[in-house]
Image 1 (cartoon, rainbow, N blue to C red):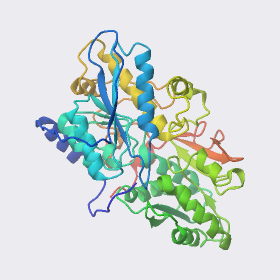
Image 2: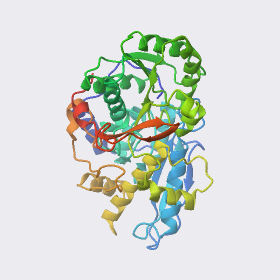
Image 3: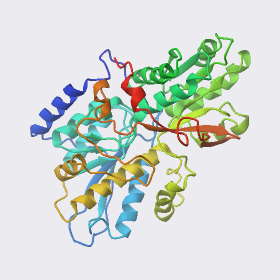
Image 4: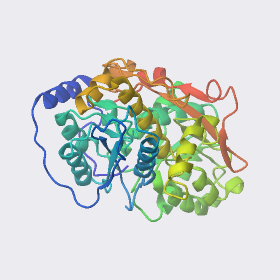
Length: 441
């Protein structure tokens, strides 16, 4: 979550986005800007039908000073190799283009223009914080955006966006609801950025649903090398109330572990507090690095979109990784980006199977996704489908169709599912009703 702050709202109303997308799609926009060597190609093996391969793109930031998601394009490549090794889909192979958006708006726009220039049928399982830079070129060319990470709200307003999870809105709302009963003051430490500006509203919606006051909003640079000042301010706010233990919620993406280094040094000077966050900011690797069972995350609630990585429903994904990417340390089955890419390619496969022997193009993929297609993900998500407007259209999220979150907890240094009865059935909660009442500006 990075980028320069802007004064305009980051929550455009649904009708304006839909009208804008329709207008852009109606025009013939010729975008032929070439991209630098940041993009690569994984050619598909020849399919059984002899048809041209189905060309798609997956992008994500890599080798930057802020959030990096190298596992997403790596997972896309592994999936393509696996599909092609097993005869393709209806005899068609998959060809994956990959692109590094470098965590900046210029890079995101270049990746989108590359997708247009290469005539891909979809952008699948990708991560970028700059929806306002990449969605317009895709919409102008009629290219669907399938299964983005949900890091910005543009993904839940774009007419050609087909998200597979509830993004940061669902995660933060779910975390707020989980913390409301047990926390005193709650301090949110989040990026001073466009995407970061969206986080307090979502966390507060969950806190309010549980009868709690809003969180204290603490801004921080996403690419800082230490967070001593932010940690002290968060602790000071969280410990103001003495009747209940305060809670500190760092949501800084890959920099969360850097924050925790500063937090551990500062916390000895303050009363004890709880910590909590969302997947994408913390995973098992971070928990291990910060002390495991003796570290600051022990007992912390962490919300995610999907079941924990040890859940048997991930077995098909792990099989693909073992067959096609064994030893590739970029692909962590517990990483939410890798998991999202797997689910996004599951959606693509369902669309291609529905198309069958028909023409595969951006138009046919888009019409198939929007034509009532229902996609089963083997229980990793609810059945996915994308009506013209979801229940959350009134609060500016017309494309958000899956607001389910899983509540997880760090127990004995391991990230495990919360006990049954905590956060809904088996730790799974649908946040749709809470988000419907979010105070979106």
